[in-house]
Every structure is written in C-alpha cells, then in structure tokens.
Length: 381
Image 1 (tube, helix red, strand yellow):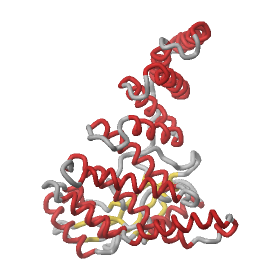
Image 2: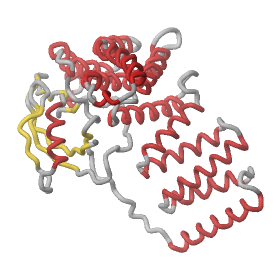
Image 3: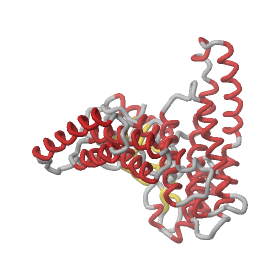
Image 4: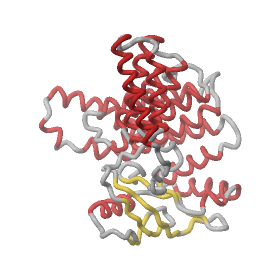
C-alpha cells in the first residue's frame, strides 16, 4: 500500500517570513506597566473578579500587536478562564477570544495546546450535533484537520481506541450531513474529504501496525486482550476502506452537480489503490474542463484538508529533491539539489517519496505522461 503524504514527510511550500515590523521599546514598557497594574488590581479585587476578564483579553491583543506571542497566549488563557467562570461556557465573546488564542498558538507552533483548544471550541459550538453554519463547520474542520495530522505522525500503539473513537465520530457527523432530509452538499463535501483522509491513513497504517507484535510481548495479558479487540475493529476498517471511500464519494457527488473537487478526490482514491483505468477515465473528463489541474503531479492525498501546524522537529532539515514521476504515479531517478550535504533526513525523505503515489500529469490530449518534479520536503518522525 502506498504511503500517504503527511505520515513521514510533509511538503514545504516556502520559508516562513519573519515579521519585519519594528516594535517601539516605549510601547513595550508601557505594556509591561499595564500588566503590573492589572496584577495589582487582581490582588485587590480577587483573582476572578468579572471586570478582569476583558482587561486580560485586551492585554492579550496588545501582546499580539507587539509581537509577544508567549505573553499573548498566557493572557488569553487568564482572560478566558475568568470569562468562563463569570459568563458561562458558550458565550459569543468566549468563542471569539478562544479563536484569537488559537491563532496565537498556531504562531507558536504549540501543537498539543492547539489541539486541546480546537477540541474545546468544537465541543462548545455544537460538537457536530446541531445544524451547521459556516462558522461552526469551520471550527469543526480545523479540529478534524489537527486530529488527522496528529494521527498521521504518532504511533498508534496505545492510541487505537482514540483512532476508533475519532473514526466513529467523524463517520457519524459525515452521515448526518450527507444522508437523509438534512443532507446538504454545502456541508457534506468538506466532511467527506476529512473522512477520506482518515481512510488513507487507515489503509496504510493498520496492516503493519497489527502485525507488529514484538513491542506488545512485554505488555500485561489484559492489556493485550483489549488491544486485540481494537485490532479486529481496525482490520475491519482497513479491509473495507476502498469500498467505503468509493461509496461515500459517489453518494456525496450525487447530492449536487459540478462537484469537481469530489470527482477529483474519487479519481485520486481509485488511482491510489491501483485502479488506474477507472481513475484515468475521470482524470480525462476533468482535464477537458480544466487542464491546469494536471499540469504537475501531486502527492496523495491532496487537497483534502486545510493547512496545519507542522509536527516536524524544530531542527528538522528541509531537503530539495528533483525526481521523475512515472506514468503510474511513482517517483524515481532522485537527485538531491539542496545545498546541504546529504544527511539521514534526506535519505529518509527519498525513501518515503519512493513509497508514495502521485496524481499523474496529463499531456494536452489528456493522456498520462512522465513528469519531472522538484519539491521541498521535511521529515516528520
């Protein structure tokens, strides 16, 4: 089974641009003085006085403006805790402040804290049980994308139950939006993409995970018994992954006309599993409408989730490779073009790219062709 993008390597689209704004030291000093004044008020009024919540949140926004993300995260946490105690858990003001805090955590790259707050915001805005709005769907998708990235880059040993709970929840949410009287193409498509992304992970990860018994030999027998139950459920999901994905996509496509993104996702899914004939038929039809979609190969899965915080180590190197993508969507003939001396990460990246499958490039007639590709990649584990 090909390796999905995002499990061992990620594509790097460009270097992060550092802010070139100049921070006035006088403003920083004034900000610190305001912080000290609030601390004094806290001593006088009590730590959780209702007037302090907005004050802490104002300080947090000031810290963001002054390029002080660590302080901003701390002040958002303080202000939100106060707001929850005094105004309840689901006020509009709390959700707005929480979204601001999430933005700061993204800048900090704190994936663990970010995951906790994305889940909390998703929970207090409906947890997928109420009718969607654009806003609540956006919150749900951000949470799903973060969870998918976490499952892609962490060991499933002792996390099987979490994977299964997430799969059941995502399946239920997707079915409620795609089937029955309340089905809607506006909500269904985005959720189908996230569930398909999870099926990519399951199709690749389950078999080697279940077969790896050596690590489990030292675990208590009761723990092993629980694991075997989870293993059976994961194996059932893996065995039915291809048909589940095809059926889900075809049903979602039938909800409305012109869902090109889902038709492309269906073709990619068939291609990934080696059903090249069926995939090529869809690729050719889509190529007639938009040849630009097939100008360059794309590693699969592609376009199913939004951007997420990188889970690579801070010291992970970026390697630039030039290679050929074959007519079957496989990478070969690698050439490392990074200025750095080849290291272990570069070797791992090359191996991972060999194990992937790419959406093919098509020529002007809509026929699959080989294509030379140059890309930047970073190892994730």
